[in-house]
Length: 356
Image (cartoon, rainbow, N blue to C red; front, side):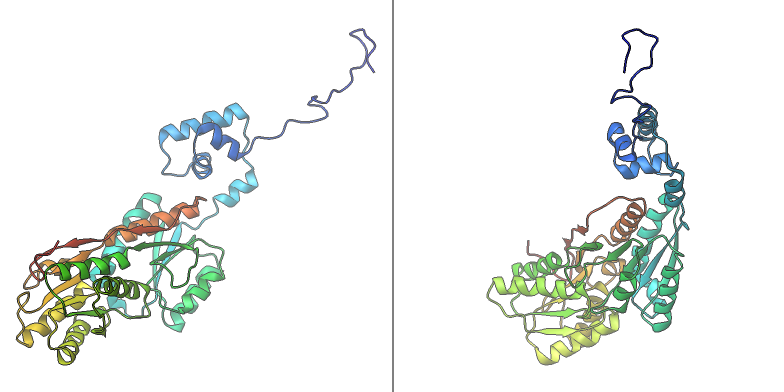
């Protein structure tokens, strides 16, 4: 008790630091004070790149004002990384990396990772050997995160990555309504654009050459095309499945002409297949676009070197790779980005002129 004189023992009041030490500031509070996200505050405190000088200064000031002291254990765990990520592709042919589509995806991935100082490991993982290698890599924590491309329905890679707690980003929307992180393009809208353009130019007997129908992109492009025809009361029953290659497009177009010789418009779900279709039409004596109009998908360089030049649905291929890698880097840093759907657009050239 107090004596009423200044020389007696003092009672420790409820606000006394001796009895109730001040609670340590948290990183969340530092982030709020600095006006940045928690992940940015974490990167600034750990001297990670890709934080602007202004934000770094704001975080340092907030930390001083709040008396924030980093937890050394948490800090060690936060920075315990190998500095490498994996791009695993559900494919078994090394030649695919020379394909214009995948080379552009890789260029986008590399550009984004260069900014984050993460190295890239490429892995073909459709074979049992490739899948086992990916499992070992993830189990040993030999990577900070994973990007997956060209996943097929019931792909074993889904099971492999489901067993890891590492960040995983998919290139393409998953078949099931999975809430994992992904970057995709508007394949459904792109297929619709192709059909609407052919219809607007007066074509009515339309056919489509799909990609492999165990790939979500192929299914979505085909569905968008069929939806646009159904809106006009037209059937979408002239369909051939191929494999996204030039030879596959040639063979599929040959089969379509044999089964439906009155076809006057074709949507091939990749530029490579559309190029093969053009060759098949020439071999059959069909003029493009006078007899048959052709629309592809991708807007690769090959589209500007066909005869005639190829009308196509453009997609941001390099942007797909860049956004995948950026999303993965953000996840590694503790951010929570949302899935991304990139837009498609129509590029009109000589193989299917006119329309809107």
